[in-house]
Image (cartoon, rainbow, N blue to C red; front, side, top):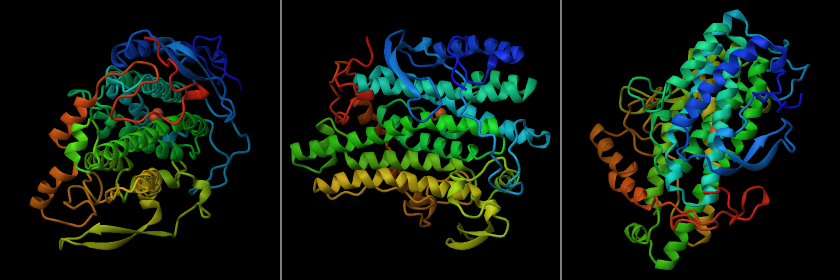
Amino acid sequence: MSINYSERIPNNVNLASDRTLQRALEHWQPRFIEWWNEMGPQFGGNDVYLRTAIGVDVEGWASYGRVKMPDYRWGIFLADQDPARTIGFGDLLGQPVWQQVPGEFRAQFRRLIVTQGDTEPASVEQQRLLGLTCPSLYDLRNLFQVNVEEGRHLWAMVYLLHAYFGRDGREEAEELLSRHSGDVDKPRILGTFNEPIDDWLSFFCFTYFTDRDGKYQLKSLAESAFDPLARTCRFMLTEEAHHMFVGETGLSRVVRRTLELMKEQNTDDPASIQCAGGIDFPLLQRYLNFWFTSSLDLFGSEVSSNAATTFANGIKGRPDEGLYTEHVCLDASYELTVPDDANSTRIEQVPLRNAMNEVARGAYVKDCEMGMKRWNMMIKRAGVNVVLTLPSTQFRRGIGSWANIPTDLQGRRISEAAYAEGLTLWLPSEPDRAHVKSLMQRVVTPGKMAGWIAPPDRGINNMPIAYEYVQL
Ligand SMILES: [Fe+2]
Ligand SMILES: [Fe+2]
């Protein structure tokens, strides 16, 4: 079904046919705009070159044009329904998918949708001040594109809550606007989404690592037997790809600029790179360590009976379930490395269904490695002897078997004291943060870039890099 833009809430779910639902969402809409104006990007009503969804086909699904952000047409867009779709995994494999939520799974679905929904506005809140220190108009536009789409993802989840969860759902939708990132009394649900993102290096790490966690959560939910949820998530993934593009190209441009500075200054001394206004590789590595490990916890515990149940019942599958040959996973087991009492580790065999969080985390880590490989290739080609790495998934965990177990970056167990000392070298220090902060000077001349980041390879939607992406 095509998207109807003549309605107050653009949608492709035939909203006009359900007056009660339409009224409920139209009631929520001004609350959302109020939240956006109060908690969203602090930037006023400038024209921004944004893409807006106009269809849900992979080909040509978006149009580009100048929009004032509060006038962005947030709407409800689901990927097309496949009438022949059946459940792709678990005990109910092969049965028809559900168009309504089965009563016995209602609480689980509600919790999953609320948790996903909570992350979307949370990231907008985390990033609200970044526009004030943008490294270029191109980057400013990308930030705003990410922000409006996270706003739309909130709409996606709120639609499901309103349409399928009755009064409980409406109440949850209100709560999604009343929790706030970092709020002492009413924080966002997940830890990473309460971390402040007040510099652009953190923003690029967040879009690289944390939006990628989002991608894997959405991939799991896109497998769900609850078809409206699966279709919602499939379309969200189309938008999400740009967020990870922003993170990956942002970090690539940092790497490229640092290599240029090293060559110009003929030095690999971190302090000299900092003096030259750049981001040295050891500092970059500490930021990567922080955001990667913080995002790992979002997948949950390695062993989880909850993960086993949601898989068995068709609620949440593995990311890219279609890549596996066996979809019931009743007899298979999974090998985990867990800490033992003797300050070392042992191998534990757990039923595969209980290890589904770890399966998803493993796929995520592989995906994170791809960008690292590309950056290391650039570094190597420049003749510089540095390798950026991802820490072990056992390092600095707050959730699961490795929670609060002191290890080094390679995941080897060490003493509390060695860990405490190590952290000062492995994670961003106060001077690191102060340096990064000092680089955050606003650059808004079209085509110009801040000194710590290289220009992108190309502009957005074939426009030149020097295009005025945001009119100030
Ligand atoms: Fe999102
Ligand atoms: Fe995102």
